[in-house]
Length: 113
Image (tube, helix red, strand yellow):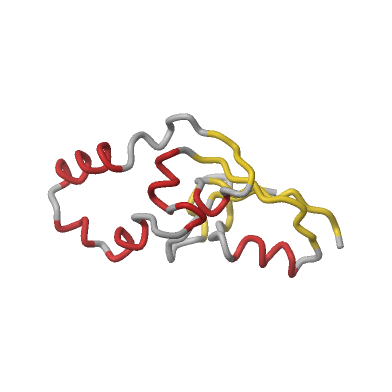
């Protein structure tokens, strides 16, 4: 099973094909509560996502962006810094084991308990 990682407060009907999205803590918890045993977790993302969420979902830029301080900057300056600091979000999307907290999509390989 998979879902985009969504660490914002808006998690319902965010993307066309997902009724609800989950953050990296809610998703495994939801699976376990509904009778699944997680065998392995994977993440699909890029260097952009690792910089945004940090390694293992810690120490990234997302907590600062969630506060909204970047909105004080003009859009052009925000885009400039985004390209320099974060890079292209579509660049080299890869599926890697155990990086699901630092990716765009979290993937759980499960079996029924």
